[in-house]
Amino acid sequence: MNELESARKTINEIDKEAARLFEARMEAVKIIAEYKKENRLSIEDLKREEELIAKNSSLITSDELRPYYMQFLRETIGISKDLQREICVRSENSLTVKTSSGNYDIIIERGAIDYADKYLKLDRKVLIVTDSGVPEEYSQRIASKCKAPFIVTLENGEASKNLKNFELLLSKLVEYGFTRTDCITAVGGGVVGDMSGFVASVYMRGIDFYNIPTTLLSQVDSSIGGKTAIDFMGIKNNVGAFYPPKKVIIDLETLKTLPERQISNGLAEALKMALSHDAELFELFEQGNVNENIDIIIKRSLLIKKAVVESDEHESGLRRVLNFGHTLAHAIESVNEMKNLYHGEAVALGMIPMCEEKVRVRLLKVLKRLGLPCEITAVDAESIINACKNDKKLQGDEITLVYVPTVGSFEFLKIPFSEYENMLREII
Ligand SMILES: NC(=O)c1ccc[n+]([C@@H]2O[C@H](COP(=O)([O-])OP(=O)(O)OC[C@H]3O[C@@H](n4cnc5c(N)ncnc54)[C@H](O)[C@@H]3O)[C@@H](O)[C@H]2O)c1
Image 1 (spheres, helix red, strand yellow):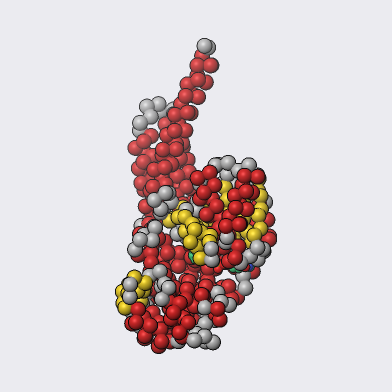
Image 2 (cartoon, helix red, strand yellow):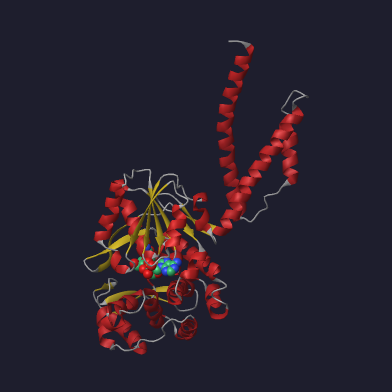
């Protein structure tokens, strides 16, 4: 081997090792960035940088090479700061949900669907699942970022969350030759999100699932927490799995096409979280302009749900707080005369009996302000109370409910059903 070849070989080996060291260095930089983000520390620390450069460059014995090494250190520090900045900026628009099977990020950004490939790995086969009520352009815009997109459009509405469509999606995956390294992306509300996530959870024992929720309800609620499901034999969500997405992108621009009533529907779930956990957010509902503050409402609702689902991933305890207002809501949804109500609207009514008197007065004002129903009309009390008796939370004669004694707090109440019945009769 001549001298030239030998020098090239040495450089090759050094570069290989340098790549390994660079990666390790950047992993450490990421940890520091996360720490700085959490503790709101500045990325800039010029004094420390100069000290580091002086100290490390003294390790170079050659006077000729030392200035080059100093320049190398400066550039490396610059690259590290770029990465730190990226992580800190991203953190303002995103949150990370921790789960036992890995963490996932939720990105909240206007216009994000137009650069979805920045966040999602789309250079593979992507089954985009949407429904006929979601403006077609959203799935088209995502598809334009994918290497091999396949769009499936289901009929819109809850009735689509069924076994037939579950089978349809699985058969499309087989037909298009999807492998374990390909992925499914939901573009739509909770219906396509729940459905696609469930399909992703079982195909080849689980492939990557991305969720791009486009209704307010799915942005504040169903896209976080990893619950996926279909409805089976007339029972809602009774077949499903816990299967966290790989990433969630919330593009607030998609709300522009969402009908007003669907916005209020989603706000009811956000209000539920504010009333039970976040007095400040509730005050925003009371006083602020909801449309102007929609990004704050979404982010804070997600932070509440994140804290709850992280501490009780598989719903064995605390997570039941998310059922605040749901006992009455489910009963209302099962009564024929009230089937025209959206789920959020039923939850709005469901919260009313479950608050302390002073809280209820404030809640009713907010419900009115948001265009949500404030009273149960056109149905007799008996049919609703009977429907409440079918609640899953009824054990013997006792029922466990979530109660809000003061705005921003909650408690679990285990009371005889007769006592709950009295609470209901006060408002029906
Ligand atoms: N997984 C969970 O944790 C969880 C939590 C709450 C609710 N859910 C489920 O979510 C479902 C309800 O979700 P939803 O309220 O989003 O209903 P949905 O998915 O039926 O969407 C409501 C309607 O809005 C349309 N739409 C969606 N995005 C739009 C947009 N940007 N512009 C215009 N129209 C748009 C849809 O086509 C549909 O007609 C239920 O099946 C419920 O069980 C799941």
